[in-house]
Image (cartoon, rainbow, N blue to C red):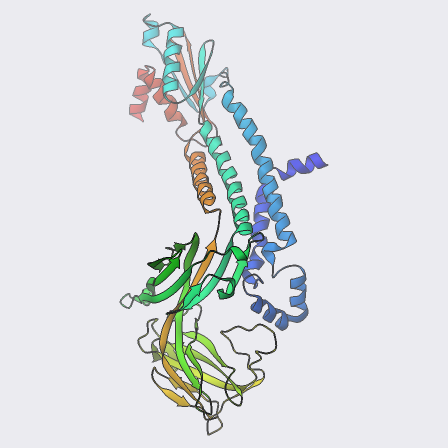
Length: 507
């Protein structure tokens, strides 16, 4: 049973099935929130779904990529790959060292076949042995491995095709192991930076931090990163669906490491490296600057607050929350929408029709009461839990709507005020250190090299038989090779077949 199970596991069919199962198993990781990425969303999902959420948590649906069942499929696939590669490598090594096989009795059955009479042999200029010597030399020049068998020469080439196939699979395995090693000994973190902010590479400075299993956070490289300016451009001249599409995102940052300070440009798909650490631009948006005063006139909150752009909105309509826990009398909170280029649609609703700051407009609702910051439960800084709060109302008893353009101030019912000072830009950066990047590069190159060899190098066997001047040239392909007939014809032509040349001209 063990031998049978091993043979089944190391077949290509089972490897493909495991690959499909692995792809299917990764789907829940894309559809459901994962603890490693957003624990707050996982907690919200569990609260909203009760027993169903608890069941999904029990089977590891919120920790898919570290669950036992996902790891089991992953490891079985790796074992299957190793079990396929090792015996195939041994067989290929033996095949490369063995002589090409003898010619079959009837060469005319081969897909590439040409028969002709050698004038040189007929006229006595060459005998059969000398003709075979010339044929063998020609085949070697064409890159074939040859062997002599009495009245014929056997040749074979294209071993690099199988070599490439093995290199491809070994590189895939190497890539997978490299990713695993990198996840064990590297780290990855995220941080949002508003223009003017400085990030110091320390554990407490990250918005989220995901260290590898064996990474010691005390060994974080020392550097600083300051966002000086962020600029972006959007197409306002393109017609149709291309209108408003982003064209450039560019952040000017100042880095400082080992006493060396540099100004660099951080762009999408053009990361920078600081102290052997990669910094990647992954997002951007607007952070309205708001000043809040309480009933005593004291400034209790001032500065930019990150608002997150709505998914799929080309106008960069952004949503966010402002929390004011230090106001006199009672805590305050605001939820709002920033419209970079405010306008009215056909229904009279306020919308943003362009992503640039051409007519910024801030619309908010206010609440008073308990923000819930002292409950000990984590909260998102981008949303407001108003379950223990009361919505502010105007003099008529209607919900208060705060609508501001930059520079405007609106009084609050409790005697305080809100001022919209302006808008700053922010960027989201991914900061990671991976000690296996060079190895990953080598693995990727080997993957492409192996794939190219396995796709573009044909595997062929060729035989040349001669008897009393009557020559037969036959070619056989290992796998798909539409050029096998032409290969036989061209070889026959090289060996002195006028008939082969005539047939080629007719074709």
